[in-house]
Each structure stands twice: as C-alpha cells, then as structure tokens.
Image 1: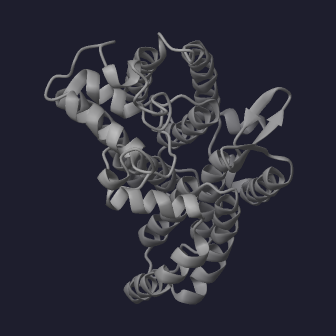
Image 2: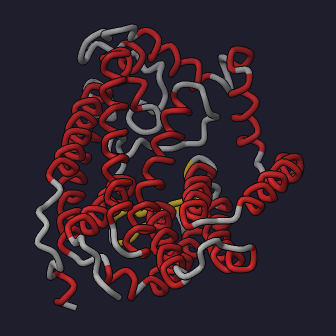
Length: 369
C-alpha cells in the first residue's frame, strides 16, 4: 500500500491549478459570510471553514496518493457506492420530501455525492481495459451503460434529480470521449425524444413537474412554484454592471432569496459584485476546467486520461446546472455550486475529485499498468 504514496514522476505540483482552487474557495467563503452573517444561519460560515480545512486535507492526501490505486480497487469502490445508495433508501434521513442523507457518528453524509466519483472510476477502468477498440459499438457499451444506470436509478429514487443527471451526463461525455460510434449517438437522441412523454408522465414526481412548468413560465407562478427563479433573477439583475457592494445585497439580507447559502449562492454573489464580478468568477471556473482537460489530454494512459476527463466533466456539469438554474436558463433541480456553496459532503467530494486530478498531473508521464 505504501508504494502508492510514492510519486512516479519528477514533475512539480500544478500550482496554478491549486491556486485557482484556493481563490474560488476563498471567494466562496467570503460570499457565504455575506449571505448569512446577520441571519439565523450565520453558523454555516464557521462550519464551512471547518469543512474547507478538512477538504484541503483530503485534497492533499489524494494528491500524494498514486491514482493507480483506484484502478486496482475500482470494482470494490463501485460496489461500496451502490450499497451506500441502497442503504440511504433504507435508513436514510428524509428532508423536504427527499431521502438523501445517512447519519454516521454524528456526521451527515450524502452518498450520491460520492457516487459521482465512484461511477467515473469504474468507467475509467472499463475504457482502459477496452482501449484497443478504436470505435465503441453498442455491444461493448451495454455493460458500462448497465452499471451506470444502477446508481443513476438509485439516486433518482431518493429523489435527487440534479445529482442523477450529473452521473448520467458525465457518463455520456465519457462514452463520447472514449470514441462512441456516431450512429449510437443518433439512436440515443431519438430514443430520448421518443421516451420523453413517458418519462414526463411516469418518471417525474409532481414537484419535479412543477419545477419544469414554473421554469417555462415563472411569472405566472411568481408567488408559488416560480418564486425561487423570480427572486434569483431579481437578485442577479439588480447587481447590474459592478454590483451593490460587499455585504449590501438586499435580496438575501431581507430573506427574499431562498437557499442563498446553498443552491442559490451565486445569486447573492452576482447581486453584490454585478456583471463584472460574475464574469471573473466564470473565468476562474473555465480556467479550472481547462486545466483539468489539459491534464487528461496529456496523460499517457487511457485510465489516467479517462479519470481526469470524467472528474472534470462531472464538476463542469454540476457548475453548468447550478448556474443555469440560478439564471433561469434551466429548471430548478437543487444543485450546489462546486467549492462555492455551503455543504460538507459536496465540498469534500469536489476536493477529492480535484485531488485525484492533481495526482494524475503530478505523475505524468503515465504509469505503465
């Protein structure tokens, strides 16, 4: 086991990427303080500092840990992921109609956050094993698709549509990146379009349908289903070009903006720092994801390449869904902004993913397996 803590490369730490992570975390922490400092939820700021310190500890451990260990234990990791998702449906804690959390030793854990990493590790090993195939056929994709749908459906059952979509979209991008045949993509698109009415009628719960309806016409449900979207857009729009100033956001201070410390944390930021501050934050995320993709493209082996790509794609999907949700471009699904929103499990899973990506960067050229 100790050999996996030894670097196989003399390459230095990727300080630019680590610095970008730190900047996003610090800005997010400052924004969290602003959105909660005079409210009953002000305790979240100090709790987030604790989780951030733990998060950087996790990141350090996973940077030092040779990522090839995950290749060796990919199947046990996947099995543990599925078992934890089953367990949460049996003994999980319910909140606001969802059963997503497990209490262990006084700590609340959200297994679906860990599942995002577990599925990527499993698929990365699969594509490494089948690396000799230049174009993946339907038969070769049947197995990974089946093992992707298991955690997807278990997460959907909780229900947690946002995280389930991240698992699904991340898997699809990995299939595409691995070299899926174009006819399969076309068939998949047709299948999705054909099954959309069935999914709407039987697959979505009433509150999920309400979110889609309110997304299409939020003004009609301004005091009900569309309240979150309306208030979020008001907060973002009122920031104008340069924002109202730090600690001056009225939407969160007057508690018009719901979940300003979790799902709608960007709305508070945009109100206080405006269009200019929003563009700078977008730039930081884009730089972070481009660094992740660069690490994936420079890996000399398929496992490292697919692992870095999948984890980067997962974080990017989560960011796009959250920002699209807050700006009214996507329906509200309940999704945190990586490294920025309050939440221990969400922050730790992001740090673990980034730690693995940095581990891949540190160990180039690749390890021969």
